[in-house]
Length: 400
Image (tube, rainbow, N blue to C red; front, side, top):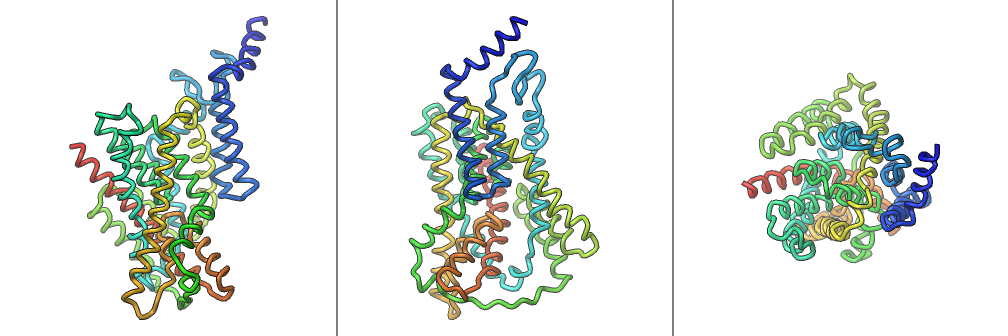
């Protein structure tokens, strides 16, 4: 009994040690994430599980042998480690999330105006710009990586993908290159910036556009594409992407499979399940698992600040790239597009399209551009996956 009481007392006093202070810092970070989810309503389905998972992962073991932490030990993994190995390490959760997202997407607006797909491509500019910037900064700011060109290339690729605000693709790339030691800041940056789209994108857009440009109206017709077109589209995209960028096939294929379930017309029950039960369940498990990677010793490091900062740079570059491309197009078009549409070319679906639509309504309460923004947003979803596959292919070739 005395031994048990001693262990319990040591668990309480642990918080006042150097390691304990780091644990308290992680509790504070978790509290900020939960606050943003509950008070600010910034994608609570993501930030709240991440924050709570962070708390669970940093709870000190009460009894080292009898009552280990939620992460468990190498010999006997805890439930958080089991979730990580079952969903992140084998890339299952990103695949399932994309099936759910695919079932939510209506590609009809994009198919009626295929020019929107160029915004999905232009908004990936930040990925490659930040990739190159990271190659320069990582060995300078992280001396421990100097001389390890393979690690620098792998880390730069994962940091670049953060700019697309596409959490599943970011996890896919980071896991493909076995960046387990950097998984916490990479995944937290990706999903945090997805949640902070309403905070980050508007200032960038306002800085690059005039009020007159933000008030540009765009025509839209409600009629949908034919059922045959909507069924053939996911099949053709999967084949083309699989042939041209094979590394994107798992994510593109799962996204298009989810969309095919939606559009085929004979699997309504499965479509609703993918959009609701599957999406909700995987989101909960994914959030907890991402939070579980935020262990103090792996998160409170200089490289975390660098990854978060470069991820923000990539996000800003992606947003700016889409807006500037739209303005460039307007130089050659008789019928102008609202340049804010370009910012929706990132992958944060449907958050970005909602933000753009609200900004347009704020400038002019009768200007409805939600469908055009959604078209650019879904093209950005495809664009980020293809970009992720291209980055994996390019880096793999460089690694030789």
